[in-house]
Image (tube, chains in turn cyan, red):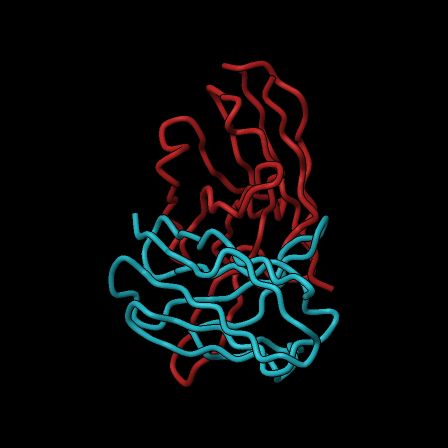
Length: 107
Length: 124
């Protein structure tokens, strides 16, 4: 199975900060990568698909980039509602695999 | 409104079986591959099983040979038959549908855009 290595595992940031989370695949997955946000006690929310396409209704401060093996999720100006855990998911090859998650906490 | 509603979770002894159900509404269920994703207490997300858009079933290595995914399109329902349950299968189980994007020629499916609320499985 393709391994997805996400970093950092956690970070502390302030409202207004620019935040970057990275995900590295163990093999080429083209641009078949999505990003998800999960808040405690809630189901995950789909943010970005195909590495850089913003899901409908997701604020434009979220963006994704990358292809091949290296990918990035960027939050341009962190808002209070963005404190959550973020996961990448490769949907290039079955079995699909998630990164281990990045918890974004308040500094 | 697109909705997914899981059911069938519960407490089961090691080695036991459970069948989870996910009832879909608000979209043409038969046109979508579907997935099961689980989350152990305090842990990250794990994709468990799913149907591709073409209808082929796939499994995570951790459940292959023990879990079976199936669907009844006439009932808009996805199932996960779980046999040989282990303590490490304890988790909240979600079902999810992919995002469908219409291209010029065909449709393309991406990830999972709608999730149910989950059903809890405890193996103890």
